[in-house]
Image (cartoon, rainbow, N blue to C red; front, side, top):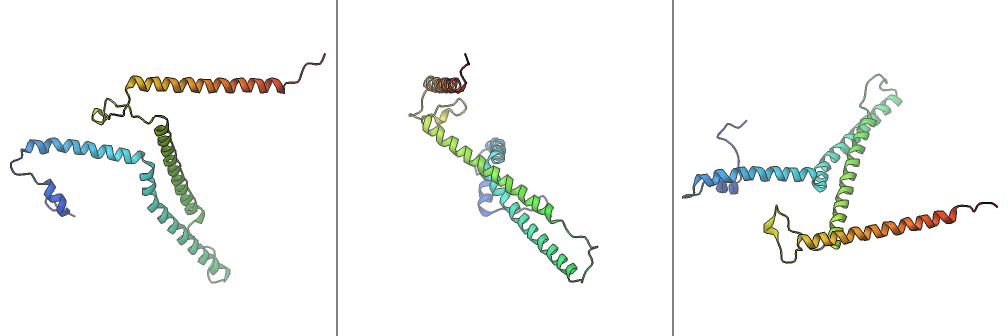
Length: 189
């Protein structure tokens, strides 16, 4: 266990954390809360990032697969010894179905992470295709670029997309009514 003064650091981090000569200590005090906020934001992003979650689940999956194989081999050896009459069936063994179920649950989580990552990627591609120019946000005014569109232009584009979607919806409704009208039998006179 390390005491208060003992801890290990890499050589690069020691130099960066020492106060600079001639630099005021108040600046270091101001930078510390922002680094804590950045770490919190980074951890929140990692919680929602499906690729990061996928990377974190891979070691668990490997461990679960090893556990499944170990339990399967122990059960196989136990059943073989019972079949050969060496051992009685009274001894308890670990349940293979529970370990296999845990493995499948991890596989399902990995599949969901991959599907979510794919959906995020496809939405990003669609967004870039249908709205290639960025709209500057109030929270990030420093990212304003020359090719970005104004908010009024963005609203105009969104309104045109909404009207196009309504036109498609109305066209589909008319087609479904025509199809439904042709499919009904005529009244007998």
